[in-house]
Length: 52
Image: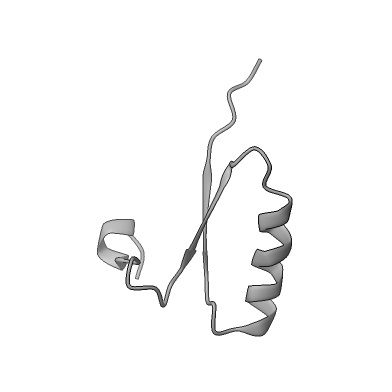
């Protein structure tokens, strides 16, 4: 059996369309394989994430 890897989705919580999609995906994330990070959050550090 293949081991599934966790994925991280970066999103913009100030975007209503993005927020709606993340809400939808969050409800379907029963296995906890998706992590959601708001790029405007104080917890988001682009340098640590390797993105700009």
